[in-house]
Image (tube, rainbow, N blue to C red; front, side, top):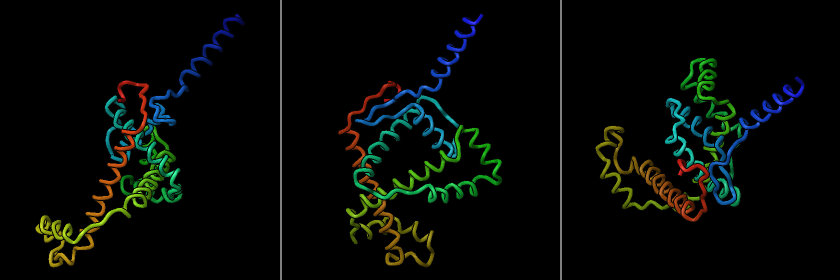
Length: 213
């Protein structure tokens, strides 16, 4: 009887251990992405986008691609000493989403449970998003220049829409600053994604799960 009890206890321990093992899904250089990282990214992304929870292979593949990009960004932030956001700053984003989408605290908590998340998961995501935006702004914006010709071209191509959005105040001079901000943002994004693509090409990426490649 004692032997049976001991065997049962050992089996229970082994089963519990098997449940908590977190497999390595992807190796990016000297960094790893775990199954739990992919699962959490899917859940957080779909929660923030207000989409139904989807843990299919397709959703996991998209999450894997995002996390691979994050490996490069984290490394660049660390090596370049770029400023990062704090959890306190992320609280502002968290408070905003609560006010926009949930009338009561109970509704927010229920939604977290439905997606298998915690408030800390969201805080950490907002902290990361703010850090990425700062990195992009500091790293790529100084290299961007918007010419007067580009500003005038954008104005000509969007003049009708600008007139509808800003009746009585839609001349080129009225909207010059707004247009330059738009064009600057587009160019910054182009530089950022070109850099990200180059990082992917240069990196050694090994998928431990074929359906993530």
